[in-house]
Length: 320
Image 1 (tube, rainbow, N blue to C red):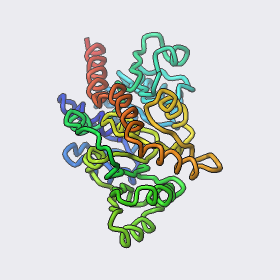
Image 2: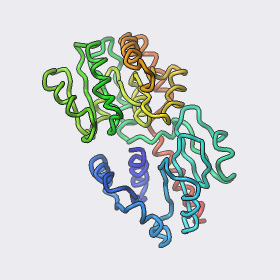
Image 3: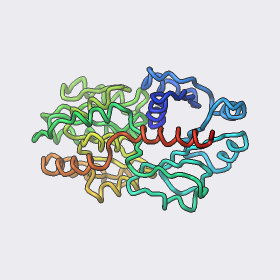
């Protein structure tokens, strides 16, 4: 999703993005960015595109990539290489390195990048779709009562966490409406639809393109770390954030320590108990207001625009 956001910002500036994706991911581009409609190639075809000089830059967002792969792209003639990372645990030979992690800075990559590389670091570079910035500008005042809750753990729904979390928090706000967004292949989907069939207060959305609007209407969110954490921050949406992957832990824990969100770790043995306690605490409007204020200061939703400008500037520099 963050690559789609960057591609959209580049296209708005006159660039022509090409996506190298596995076949199963092509439908996500068609579903979530129908207006973009970029050409699609297989990852194995990247080298051919670069060798033909058919692109000015390559943007890589892949935890499996190592510096050897980046060197191969250079050998093929890649002029400008941009890498998206949030781990700071491996070397790169990129021209630009983007890491939106909370507290990240150039110092985290000093020993991992060439001295000429530019580091775009911190939540100011979180790659969000433009509707989040627009909705942020229209943000409504915080309601005293929790009337709507947005629940989403992304498209993957690790360990059926969506239905497990909903089973815990739904009874804690029986009068609220719960908007639940999941992927079409989510393990929780059947159980969620069965729950919604008997509970008018639960509405399930499958691969919705309107997640930003649902967040904008919510008083409280329950969801995973990762890119969606920045979406919630941008909108000032008080969040109970569940760490569902190891790479999310450093950023989510740092955000929790700075009072931006409330965190729960799925790896904890009694995580459901912590989830219940965290949700109950966020029913307090003063607590939600504190999270809202801290979130709005942290992320304005215009990171994709800044990243696109930096990449295009680097391309122009290389052409000069």
